[in-house]
Amino acid sequence: IEDYLTETLNSDLHKWFLGKIDPEEIKKRKEASKQFRSRYSAD
Image 1 (cartoon, rainbow, N blue to C red):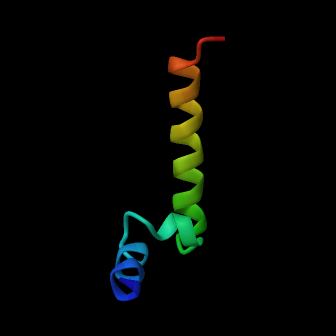
Image 2: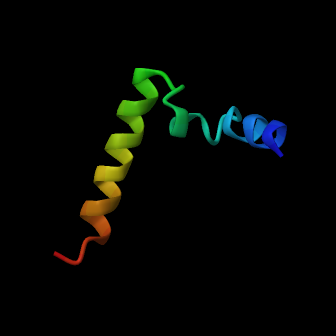
């Protein structure tokens, strides 16, 4: 199980969880998140 979890967490879809993505990708994700919240927020 440990090998499976390690493999999964090191995949491109889960690298964010371990902080293994580059700063440019972080900026893109934050901007996308901000746009999503502004579009769908109930406020």
